[in-house]
Length: 195
Length: 148
Image (cartoon, rainbow over all chains, first blue to last red; front, side, top):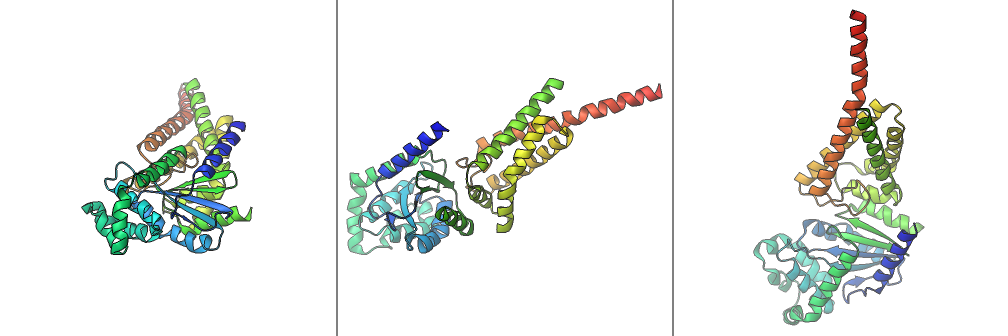
């Protein structure tokens, strides 16, 4: 029991220490619940979660100040273009355009997963001027470092699959793997909020 | 044979108790999310299973450990594990990216979980066969005594 408490405290401290990446965190930082979503842009379940339950969490909980939502990259080595997509999304976050780029990448996942043309999809989601900045930011070592930090954090959380939502309330952390049905996820969030 | 039966009974009882413990130590809705990710049951059934299955596993584990009604307990364990295994194979063949839900969170469905649960199912089936064997053997002995 003592070991478990120590592990919880260490993990919570690590989570608190891990800075929310600029442009990838949404909602009130002081919200009672914190959700960190580790995704891979090329993973179909991540697309389903992003377009389904997560969109509804954003609408019902993040905007209401109940959840602080943080997106983190966890590109899997088996997905050839996932790292490049993560780099574009992370670069877009630095221009506060993460949501638009992430939505486009997930929406057109089938296209770029086959063709490898990630850039074309991103270009369709931002203005030409922004795209020019993005091309430079993708090559910036800071962008790559931010992805590495997310991956390291995922490994620290013993992530075993993507997507994984790590839901934190106080010192307790609840890792939830795979795509989720919003109705049951909502029950869980409401249950945590009521305690 | 008797010691194999006892060993299997303890092992299966321990597995069911551990499975129950890993589910009961977390909020029950986390297990509900794991069940729901298989997309097999309607919401009301997901919630009902999530509420009851861990307690059922706890009871089954205790019954197996006690050895009381072993034939029936072993048959129920085999049926339960057979059902789980069938669902897992189905989800794996469909390429579903889900949490196994077998022993708490962070246990994604994959070859490792399938091998583990396959071994458990084989153990439960063997236990069932062994649990029924003494009854058949004693019945045979009785028949031979009567015919003599």
